[in-house]
Image (cartoon, rainbow, N blue to C red; front, side, top):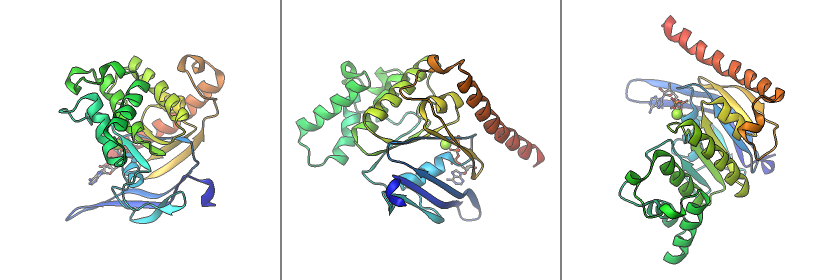
Length: 266
Ligand SMILES: Nc1ncnc2c1ncn2[C@@H]1O[C@H](COP(=O)(O)OP(=O)(O)OP(=O)(O)O)[C@@H](O)[C@H]1O
Ligand SMILES: [Mg+2]
């Protein structure tokens, strides 16, 4: 029943085509995602994670199959979805506040200037950057810039948040802080989240379910039953955590090794 799901990915395949060649990036993907659920797509480089996100965003269309949101097929990008990319996605000529406002101007056309500013500041404060609103990207660390990108994504107030390795380039300590922040904010703001990562620990910390991908396909869908909010320090060392971690590492690294063998065989 479509009513029970926020997002339904049904028998989705996708092919990249240029003049001479075509390449199957996704083959018959099926995932149903509930409202408020946090789903991580975990997989090695090139297995199709970003491609699947671009289909969810509506930038690309499936070759076959369909994606439904609230039971209706996606027709291009929409206000119901916000995207946060890996890095360098801020406009360098705008301040932190300017970057957040940029998104708000698109999504909240009816808001007055003052209302937009209040909203921008509210989200900058949520990510701990209220005092840095007037800084430009080149005056902020990578982690601060990523927090602005998260604030910009949240400020769109879309029901669905699509995140493509948003913390890939950030040092481990700050990364953990941002992971815990995103987990907290997505629950508080009742988001349905699809979050791409190739980091097993990150996936366990954030996800309600982890979709382990292999090239073009889903290898396994693994539920994570720890209650939210999660703290890495509370989890690591627990028997259940270590068991899940081992299971995911073996699912994930089998894929990676398979890829390497395929490349060697070629
Ligand atoms: N524009 C394109 N044209 C042709 N092939 C592409 C294009 N974009 C991606 N691909 C191919 O599709 C496959 C999936 O790419 P995708 O970017 O979705 O992988 P990914 O899982 O996001 O990888 P990564 O972890 O490195 O970001 C790869 O083999 C890639 O080479
Ligand atoms: Mg990618």
